[in-house]
Length: 350
Image (cartoon, rainbow, N blue to C red):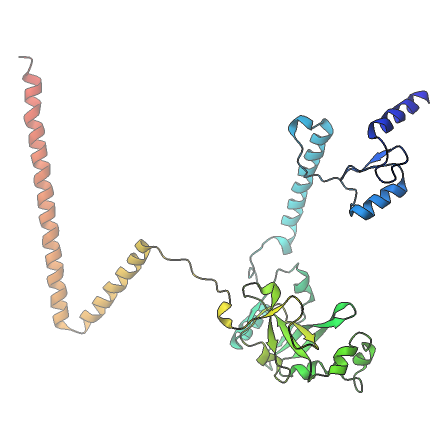
């Protein structure tokens, strides 16, 4: 017992006093921020005030001179965990690839092609993304009609922004018709149930509300939005827009965009994936066969062009023969010079 007491006394003397209450001797040190505390109460106070979770930062820099065997084992275990994490991700089929359109199913490919016909750039996320799992957008192939999944974001509520989701909204309906279930207190039960949250929007009415589509595919898209018209159909409002999985529409009773957002004035700021520039040598190689094809196609329809083409070819052949003749003469001259020098070298001793 005496040995245990001496060890605790030496430990407390080394830690000093508690940094929270400054009354008692410290007994514990936080693994993350190294704050010295004396009791559970002080530990909870320090976590609450410093927003500390008490978990040691395993990637924190530590000089090699200060590392111990415990630190080396901790780093080794950390690398082992990273290896296991990577292996499990490789075994998961949904996380095996990262290309956006890799292995796109047939229904999603049809939806994307039909959206392109409507001048809507529809993009899909990887299967393990939450937004992909929430998407219930459906394409009725017989009717050739979209039934969109819409996320309604009502601004200015008690919670700041209140979110509702509609599973399948007909693209031929206007936005005012789609919002009627949240604004019409007389006929819609949903509107009466959400009266506490949507009171300001219901008082304003659809005529005073402004609708904003969250922008995608433009510069600074996280803080920009498009203005929508409530009297137009959903398909008309989405023309020329980029939609990631499904549209997110803000509903506000103020005549300005939501806080932190600004309006996208023109479509010239849309980000387009440009093709890589072709090098000059490659461009010349591609252009040369095209020129030859054009020349041949012209020669097919004119005898004079054929004659001119043959004359040009003859001239080229003559030039090539002359160059070869000159090169052969130069080689023979060099060989003769070398042959003249060899006897002199061997006969010089005599």
